[in-house]
Image (cartoon, rainbow, N blue to C red):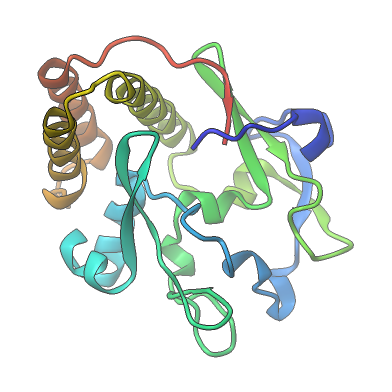
Length: 230
């Protein structure tokens, strides 16, 4: 999701890599769950997020969509996001104590917070959203350790490829006056990357790469994304 913001106003002005230290460690949040409430439709899920949720919870994408996820349009592309509910608009994966029930396989955006990503020149770096987290006296920690994602470099490659694919798809769909054609494209993407599911015996990334190539051919998605903050 593109954000129309001034990078210098929302960050400390620095860009970080996986091996850099950044002041984000909130010491297990100590009961705070402010970042898990009132997030609207902003916690978007990529195919790897859904793969991990589906594997961790033993549920298909369709089952997750019935209970904890929802779909909405992001610049012409239909994508899933975490559902918020109740008086405080809390994430539906929070328990009564305000703790995350899916912490081990939480989505990438949740892992990042309060970091964000800035994409430029077919790559991306991390940045600190200085006023996003309510916890004070945070400690420094390596970005890689904070995100705590297996196969960090492999995952970064996937994130970049998915980001570029979605952005190019958005450009194509925003130019399509034919709503029926746009619907068919979105149904294709949802089926290929979400509903179809993933074989557990085969590397997710291997399967994703094959599907991405096929989708590029079938949908005519080519090109490299422009700089954007997310």
